[in-house]
Length: 394
Image (cartoon, rainbow, N blue to C red):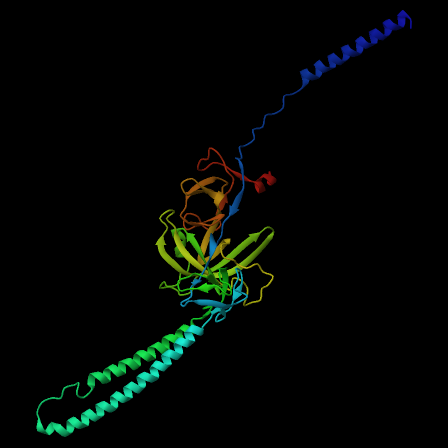
């Protein structure tokens, strides 16, 4: 490229740059400033919920441990060698009411019964003989009493001897009764349908009165002691009160891994004392057929003694009450309301009770009010607010 061409290209570039700069300055000098428009303050964006009044059934959550409703320790009343033992008399075994738990050798008690029966026969003979003597003595006295005004000596008429013979017969009969009772006591039977908690008796073992040989717990029902807040009690039906003899329903829930099982029970009584440690009231829930024996619920896990379970108590129904989420409540028992003009209003409310996630409101708000659920800082009564629906319309 020659020097002349280079000079020509340089001049063209300078002219282009100069023209661009000039045009930019001209456009800048002729541009009008944009018109300033002030946007109105619409307030913070909030979430609201319109409240409504409806009948609300009170559900009271609780927990408790399963305990035996009836439990006994088996103690023999007579001594002897163990002859037979029920094969189900093992820890975890089930025994039906009236079924023999174990039996003792009764030969000594049957021998005692024969001795007692012989004693009765002898006492009956002695009494008959004494009655005959007393009759002869009475007839003799009747024959001789015309010659005297004195009362006869009771001994002469065999009065005390006769009473003694009658007493001896009663004593002999009592020994027969005792002997029969001891024979019955050699067969120890279950007083109710039960599960064996523990046992320590085997054939050939010698047992004596006062020895604990087994423990039985009823399978007909179990009890769960539940501690409740004092303010929960008026919402429940407690048997024995003036209002009802039928307790509130209870739903018992047991979670074992991914499996959940349920049982139904009822409140059967209140202990009538407050726990001094936590100042809570105690009620007893009774659950029938906890092992599923009557209903043949073989696949269902039994409600075994010692299980810790969750409970939902079905309380009374409060008519026409407003329920709001707990996060709708503010400090000092107040709520934030969005009025018709889109402004925040602070209202004082009366709280009837707290459920697990909700609060029941008695006074302060009415159906149709819009409760603000969003947390805000620096809130003042009358401040502007807006909802998501309003944001879409802007």
